[in-house]
Image (cartoon, rainbow, N blue to C red; front, side, top):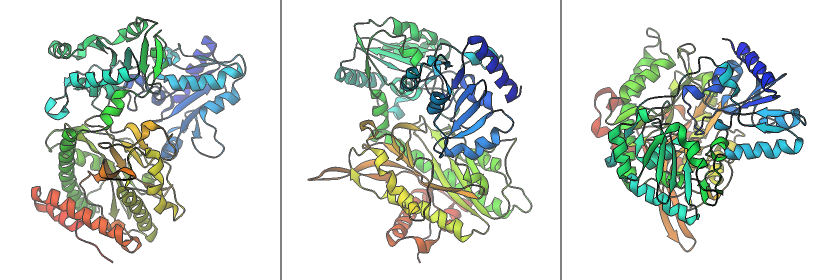
Length: 598
């Protein structure tokens, strides 16, 4: 069925339901980033395959709102779909909420599935629309009426996360959450986000691509802890293990009834940005709103976890050396053996899967050559992928899930001859990454406030990038986790403060539409830097172990301290990886980590 046919069916369903507008966020009942097929509503309706986007449909208009990472991709995906591209952040394009407020009139109704809308999102919508006489209806699922072959919910089994890697038992974590509940005077606490549930329960699953999580809700009181999950996913032995640690397993679809049974005179703690309006509205208890305690706890990796993370990073580096040695040879053979982006993804998988404790990719590999690199979230598919031919820049952003940690790395690869501007762009991005890497800052600084440090070298040349500089990274969990985020566009709140043990990406970029894109990324961890009369200070420990190709750089544009950092980083990388490499991979490593000077 074409996108135009689906859009027509949705408008017919809207007319029957008596609603004038329909809002479709990219979300599920757990407000996940990566969604099970059952909840890929926006992708099914519009044909846009990016990971984030918001849809608004009225009788006369259909629009998809995406940020600058997806403008080029969305423009391509939406051709002939009936949907108009709305650019978040572009001058003249209003946010979808303001568009709705301007377009809808008194007496109109906006339908949005409350099972896929956060409580805070619902409050923002109602706060904007209700004064204008527009009703927000969250009880309708119009898509289910027209998506006749909608996939079922995932059924993959859940498994225990070995305590040798987890470090802390689930009973220990439960006690810690209850301690925080007492600080808020909360008798109850509900968790819906999948990585929070997986962390708390020391369980992992396979319900979504790339992230080892499973669909579940958790409801905790001072005496009880209930896990709402598809009972077919969890063995009787694992249920008994959970019961021993204080958790009772209940059917997935009974969560709403359980919340409805919480006494109205008691208090419940929930994260307004991480629970749906449909679920929390079922609960009559008095509300206490704050970031989930588990979100803050899991963001601060323990030293036990960091030991495993460093080893996972080292093994990832070994795999990457094998891969890049192969890639160098493949680039040289392009005249007789074609090279494509899909081949790169397959080879990365081949080399990483040979490493100890490898589980899966941590996200869809971005292998983008020249103009495709200008799309920060470009994805090559069987139906649409480019050959790597001619000269230019290859951007490779990839990562893996290991039992001991989650990796995420971006490197630039020179293919043939590079122009002076391409080298200048790569150098400016590297300078930004180095500046943030070398930063020392007071403990507790809100992470959005340090974003300008990485951007300053790009701003010098009047360039900028539309995405954030850094995101939190999980421990064999989601490759994107909070609460920290290094982006001046993010809200500055106490919850976004940086603390010891937080793993964060450092990935400035520069994108020239239709030409090329540049991004260089390492993962870092906040560590103690010292204490003075002015307080305690933090710095970043680099975790990623892989050379940065100096052939992409204008070494004369690097400051002496930046050149020194690059040589020191390569010395460290070589010392970590060389003892376990041989042959072509070792030769590649030794070549790429040679000291450079000007």
